[in-house]
Length: 348
Image 1 (cartoon, one colour):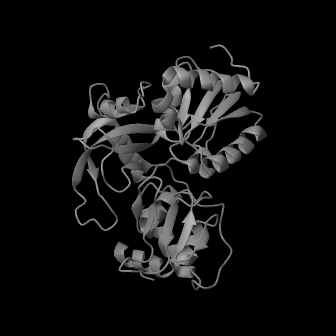
Image 2 (cartoon, helix red, strand yellow):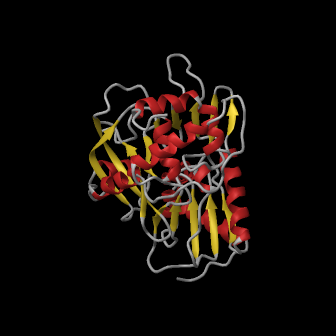
Image 3 (cartoon, rainbow, N blue to C red):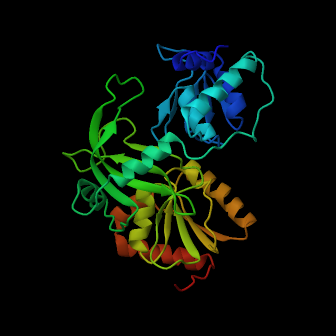
């Protein structure tokens, strides 16, 4: 195949071999009807990301969307995220290599779980860092109005506000240049390096989330990482939560605790604990996805010798509990659960 073929041609060729592509680069996924479902762009187990295998109802084969983060694109975009490619040239080289030896889509072949190149942060990670750097303080902004409307008072430097963030409303939106205000939250690894930026698009007239499809979206890499809210000096105890509002609700009731928000159930189960942590409380949603994510994370933590306990809300999530029962009642409830699980809280 000519190296001079356009990106559009390469994307189309990958789409023609979508199922083989999925088996090669996302072996932890599984086929569900006309879609290949996997946890995220890193290839983790789960069902949040769906890749269309055949053209259907005017939608192209190879199109994908991560319903947990709002990200979407074609197989070139997805391959770049999977590889962590620094340059588009590296991604296109890998695509050509795959197409040069790709089997018929109907014939499964040995998948490669290891050996994928990891050249560093992708362009999306670089864009995420640039976007967060352009943000302004949350206090006094529409983002503060949103959080206060949910009874959340725990803030921190991981949060910023931007009045005009680029927004494309859907996969087939012909106008990619719309802008909307957004709460920004930086995603970091255990070294403190920014790997991504979560965007919570807001409605200027309502003070709530924007009335669009997937108002919560992620730019960059989330796998194993989190949005972090430290209470001061490093501690040995950590609360790891699911959604941002869920985690900040627990943090509002327990301001003395360090927090890490993983944003989705899938990524809660994939969280990589920072060094020095001895106890982790898993603040999950009260649903099956949260239960499964908690089990997966608990198994990993126990293999590392980290004690862990579950914090489960009375209602759907801890923000529901905070708004229904108030901060003081939620605090008492959480402390009772922590004490009942027999895990001593280490003084800071």
